[in-house]
Length: 172
Image 1 (tube, rainbow, N blue to C red):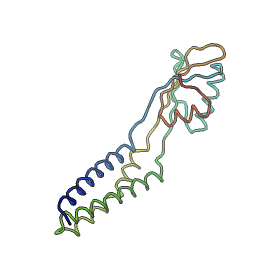
Image 2: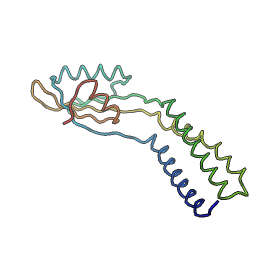
Image 3: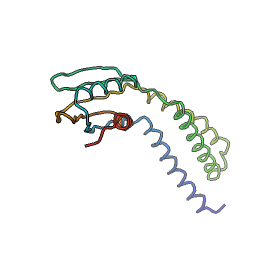
Image 4: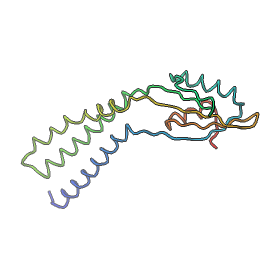
């Protein structure tokens, strides 16, 4: 095979492996955000709805600060079996491609490179150990009019999206 073709294929494969590494590492990254949400309900009924909502999602009240009008909920986020298997599969495909390119670049040690496939399940293990954690949701009720309420919520971005969808809250 032509040397420039092998070199460019090797370079692109190395760049893809770097991207795969950062993709796997980002699977356990904290994605906490803070947003202000508007509701058409008064504060009392909104707080009852919020407690019911987080209770249904297996959160429990961890702290209440009456002075700041703030409530903190805690819940354990469990890792996804699908995502663990998916990340292991991606790592397997990446290791297979990398081993294939390395056998073309360095044909003398061709049997050694296939051993990289044995490392691919570590991607799923890495995700499984890093994804399970205690997640906190902090709610702060702020003054609003009698018919409208404003709350500041600090939580994971997926939890914020589900909260907005379920309780029909508008971002400020």
